[in-house]
Image (cartoon, rainbow over all chains, first blue to last red; front, side, top):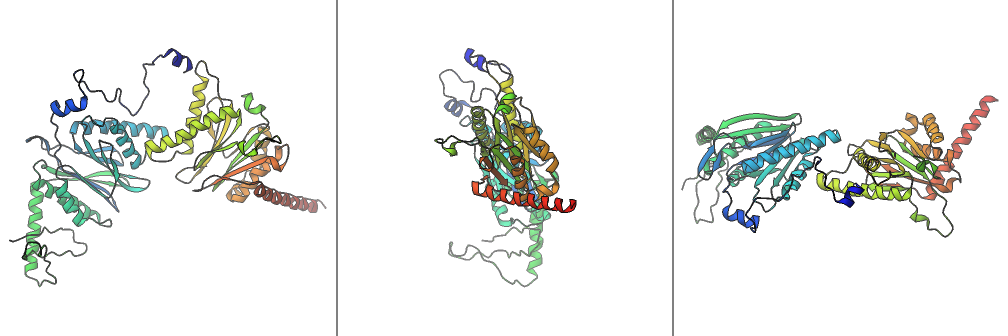
Amino acid sequence: MALQDVCKWQSHFQGPSPHLPQAGCWAVPRGCDPQSFLRIYGPRLAHGTTTLAFRFRHGVIAAADTRSSCGSYVACPTSLKVIPVHQHLLGTTSGTSADCAMWYRVLQRELRLRALREGQLPSVASAAKLLSAMMSRYRGLDLCVATALCGWDRSGPALFYVYSDGTRLQGDIFSVGSGSPYAYGVLDRGYHYDMTIQEAYTLARCAVAHATHRDAYSGGSVDLFHVRESGWEYVSCSDVCVLYRELQMFTEAELEGEAHQTQPEPVILRGAEEGGEFPVGPREMAPGDSRIPAETETL
Amino acid sequence: MSARNSGKQFEVAIRGTNIVVLGVEKKSVAKLQDERTVRKICALDDHVCMAFAGLTADARVIINRAQVACQSHKLTVEDSVTVEYITRFIATLKQKYTQSNGRRPFGISALIVGFDDDGIPRLYQTDPSGTYHAWKANAIGRSAKTVREFLEKNYTEHAISDDNEAIKLAIRALLEAVQSGVKNIELAIIRRNQPLKMFSAKEIELQVIEIEKEKEEAEKKKSKKTV
């Protein structure tokens, strides 16, 4: 308004906007730079988790463990790390649980407002862009949100990775958290775009189970979600110890079964480097095999 | 409201099945004036364009703001604007100026055409009060009423199903009320997934020749019937 500009009058009523008021303000002692203050004295925040998401022909799978750790203390063994945003969008969360929960509520509000204004929900790409833009304003203030947005929009299944420094990546497979290296190993091994839904479920459960087996900060159970064209659905919740034992039993049964058959092609791995040959358990990957056999190494 | 009707030009827009057509009557330029700087059809983005009737300077302000809004939308949300979104933006801007002190309303009416991501063509008209409506075909400016009546009579499913027919309909509507003939017509089209295309004078002439032919044939048929 022209007169208000001249008189420099501020209206107290703030209309809806995607920015929280007074972005960048953190209460620190006078004269201190917020970033260095937080680095030295700030709260030690928890980051341990294993979450993963991958997209394939029949939608997007999101899976996560349920252990919330605070240092070496398990704060909650049954936390929910996959947050629904709306009917066709889920987010896996990793980093600071409080930050994730809050920013997801802000994203929900933003998407809902836009849906009301435009008459249709924004695409997953838009949601990811909005989230990363909102969070990048707080860069340098120890915000830690590493999330994978999984959804189905007009362009089909979509998957985006968003980090709180503003990173926004599109991809087919993402795993986030302290257990992600272990999960990536299993995922990269078994992923292909055209797999069946059951294969996808098995792959996701297997990846999280293996990650929880080795990572101290991941554990509890595996929450499995599937985003289809009709919306997201909560597939299953399986305890990781039980799951891991079952996977081991499958591979043992497979090995026993194979020991009685003639091997067409025994596969030998990593022979040259260590100056010897390690006899490795034979692996069969028949097409349509829904079990991923773990390899057994004997030294 | 009278500002936009007291000008000497008018605009016509038609929404076809696969094409949107914008036609304007150009002001005749003085001898020493460079014709290219007089533009009434402006692209707001690759898939949306706008024609206006009224005060050119006001239109310039609105067009600048709308062009920025299109790019801001792409930056925040990664998708191009829908025609309805940018129309709502322009209409909201106009309405703000009717309700603040120290400012006067924008003296223009705009016709905004384009294709959305889903491939559906759209045509919207805004007026200085800030309202907007969707239209199948419309005219604004001088003699808008006459032209609109012509369009109401001649806008048929057949007329708009073919791209060429839609273009001819727009030119015929313009010829209804244009004062100084073919030379003062400016035409632009947007086809699905293609950017704005301005017609050259030659192309417009070709279309007009076809229209004249069709008229003659129609008259011959009529005279045959009466005889």
